Structure formats: C-alpha cells, structure tokens
Image (cartoon, rainbow, N blue to C red):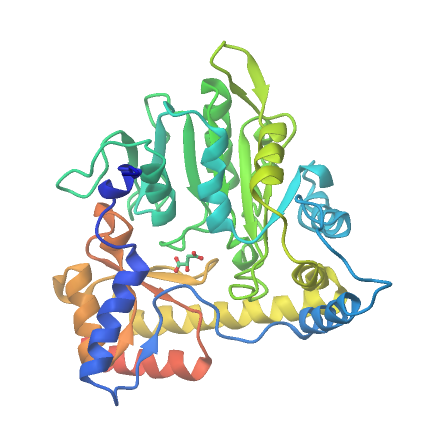
Length: 411
Ligand code: MLT
C-alpha cells in the first residue's frame, strides 16, 4: 500500500479558518434567520477596481481573436507586468530590484509555502507568536518540525513572542536561526515595523547567513510615511531577504488571484558541499517545473493597478478599509475595550473583554451579536486573550457589528 507523508498527521486538527467556518455553519443551521456579520477571514468585500475589470474584459477579447490569442505565458510572468511592478513598487521607493527578480504567481499564501522547496531540511526556523498559520503549517508538512507540544507549539521551531510590551515586533533572537518569517504590516496584530527595527533584522541576517522571508501582502495599508513598504528599502536586504507581495488586499484580487515574489539575484544559500549557491536560479527552476504561470487575463488586470485610473481606484479602496478599521478602533475604545493595530493595517487586534479566552469570546460574539471574528489563540499561544477583527466589509456591516458589540460588551 502507498505510504503517506506522515508529517500531515502532526498538524493540529484544522486550519484556523475552516474551523471558524465549521462553527459558524453549525450556528447558522441551528439559527437560519440569524443575520451574521463576518469580520473573520481577511477577505475583501468591495468590487474590483473598474480599471482592472476593463483591462480583463479587453484581455478576454484578445484571447478570442487569433491575432492576439495567447497560449502558455512565461512561468515567471509577462515582462510588461514585471516591469511595471519594479518601476512603481520598488524603483519609485529607491529600491534596487530588477524585473527579472520578480516572479508573478497566483498568491502569496502559495509562494510562502512553496518557497520551502528550495531550502534544505535542517534549517532552524523562526516564526513570531502569534503568527499567520501558513508559515507554521507548511513547515510541519515539509517535515521541518517535530510533533506539536501540549501548548500547541511544534518542536523544533523557534517562537518569537510579540506582544503589547514589544509593540508586536519580535526581539532579535540570541541564537542563530536560518530562516525567519516576518510579516509587516502584521497579520494578525496589525502592527508595523520601523526602519530601525527592520535594519536590525537585516544586520542580524547578514551576520548569521540567515534568510528573511518578508511577507508584505498588506503594504498598501501603510499610512505613516516613515514606515518602509518593502524590505529592500533597508540597506543590505538584497543579500538576505525574499519578499512576498499580493494584489489580493490592495486591489481586491482574493478571488481573482495574482501576487508576486521577489528573489534578488544576490541572495545565496549553502549547498551540502559548503559552497554558496544563488537562490534565484533555484526558484526559477522550481517555478518553471511546477508552475505554468498566472493567466494572461488576470495579469492584464493586475497591470491595470499601475495605470493612473487604477492607482486612484486602489487608493480609494484601501482608504475605505482603513476608515472601517478606524471605526472599529474608535467604537471599541469608547466601549472600554483595548485595541491595537488598525492604523496602518486592515486588522484590529482586540484584547478580549471580561477576561474571556479567545475562543470563548468567539462563541459569545457569534451567539450574542451574530458577529464572526478570529480568535487570537488560533494564531499561536501568545494570541490567547486576543481577538482579530478584519476591516474588510461594507461600511453598513461594520457600523452594525460595532453597534451590536458595544451594546453587548461595553465595560
Ligand atoms: C487572513 O484572514 O489571515 C487572510 O485571509 C490570510 C490570507 O490572505 O490567506
């Protein structure tokens, strides 16, 4: 009989979001008339920017015409999209990134997991606690950890606690670690990192030969001009960092699927024979073997994000969600509930009221207010006693959710 990848058996029962969906479905079955408001999974609700829609309609027409039809595209993405990304997202911010270092993909979640294909089995891996669960679970699946301990942590991973005391930015570890996942603006806490904090990480990584896996999927939400949008704004980052970016949250592409990963050509890792090997050709080989690229239609939609109209429309979308986050922050604060984040990020990190555990608050909120959020403990042990509210919803729903929560939980 075929054997399985036993690492999957180490995974804790359910991925966080399916578990939330399960509890919500059970509640809805028992209460079919409940008017549920979802501020749980960070999924956008507002329609795509018009510029993207128009570009995709035109691209569909291209595909229906022999003269402009496209078959397989380049596995790395079309040059016209890679060029626009580099000019707008990097060179305009003073970062030295080339178009050939951009790899277009169908999502940052996939890239964050797939990137492990090019790294060895024996790296020491550090994650923050709380953390976006994909970083942990993909390492478990790849066999980079031992089993889960009683406290939910996996043996072999280095957990870096982030909390109110350290402003939700991890302290630099004392021991050397090889791969470090950083996410700014942070999912789930909504925190951002200063230039100095990121410089400390880059200096550490260069000193130890570590690689930073920098998830910048929420960079569009940075409102503070002093906060870096890309790790490549930091001196030396080209020698130690891979960056993940996405069109999901800025342009509403969660259902359309387009993202990209930056692998600088100067980045190197160690081979078993002790030699230094560039990572760019390895990722290029991985992508051209296992991936056939993102559809032409979707890449044309993503390209339109960089048009003048696209830029204005994306800015408006981001502003809209940030205003939602501001409403959530203001209403909960007025109700005496502690909040963090939500200023440069679409997530508000809430201290659960009345000393409730994260899941108890989840259940109470669902049953009393018919509002869905995400329990902080689902992101790691240090998230216990916290709760994440997403600002991705209509204004009407956000206002209604806040009215219900403040009515039920004012302290
Ligand atoms: C979340 O809610 O954390 C997001 O949906 C994560 C993601 O984009 O995969």
